[in-house]
Length: 506
Image 1: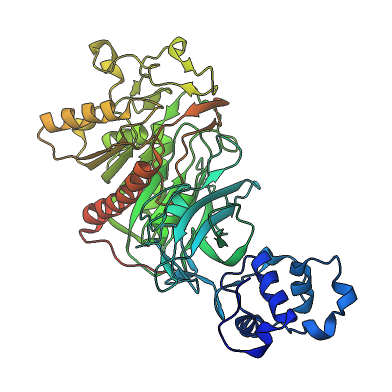
Image 2: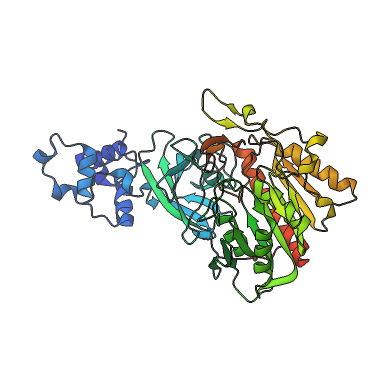
């Protein structure tokens, strides 16, 4: 133990040396006795080592315990923020506010560290089923003892390099094949952000804060809809409107999925999240889907007073994407459609309309591939070749629609060949002289979600009961989700309101 150079007489006493050694055991960097007294005052502790311990009491007692008892705290150094530099507590900050919408980017900063101090940041989130999702990254503080994740590079961990939102999009569950999907949009996801000393075992906590990430903006109303046959939830933005109206459709996993619709309503869209299978009395695998059900949903949305009367938008993912195209083809009043990881043919369930039925695209479950190592199911080769004219009676004749189209997909989609299917649709529309927007993302998988929801490479398909491989690479998928979310909103604002994206707040 080197001598303290501060000149305070007490630092040279046995007690002073004991203090400094105890601090070393507790891994308090640059812990000089004179500075510890200042740190103790900052934390509200009362230091009285000389009075509380007699020499005989110190025999066989660790110096860490002595230090903690002297400060009148329990010997759990990782349970509360500790000083990272002399007389200054470590602070973890989320800016501009610890409370935000889930799709909001934030600035994560850490102050009060030593210059060039090595630390590990960890994010933890407990979902509604009790599943723990975590991510961590190793950093080195700047010369000012601060970290700014928008500028400071991660040196390793769940990701590397400068990734301002990396602690969110790299969250992973300890159990395999879990998907982070919000069930109750009335409550937030609470993300604990912690900073630990060093690049080791994360046992010495220096500071923490909690980021509340909400799915429902200020003043947004959530209204369950059970009108006629409809099984849906309506989300109304704050204010009288008029607002653009959207119908939101998820895929063949079924259920009533609300979190994307609630975020869109928080951004100024009247949004109807619509269930069409595997929910309440809706069958898990319908023998047929009826276009009249979707027409009922569209008419319900159009009659809402806050909805602008210039036309409706449809947003669909996977099976929901080809339903969105069918709605735009056979129902009047639909002005804009976004297809995510979809196709240009009717998949898996026949679609019955007024005087017509579109059969399902031919498929052969004998071509399902199951990994021997992981047990994951790969459906990418199940469908017959979409270029074969024998399958064309399953095509959706969207050429007859006057709607505007935006197609989004990932090139690493392992569920099915959405990139090829989207290219086919775009080519068909362009041959008819139609302008089409299309973006195919390298490294992105099937489940393109709102930004900062982490990549789900595989999860249980609730209807099929199988673990399905969705594909995607972490960094590339995160980039794709950010870009796609902006494109979706800009596309709908342009074609439903003839304006740019407005600003919104929580």
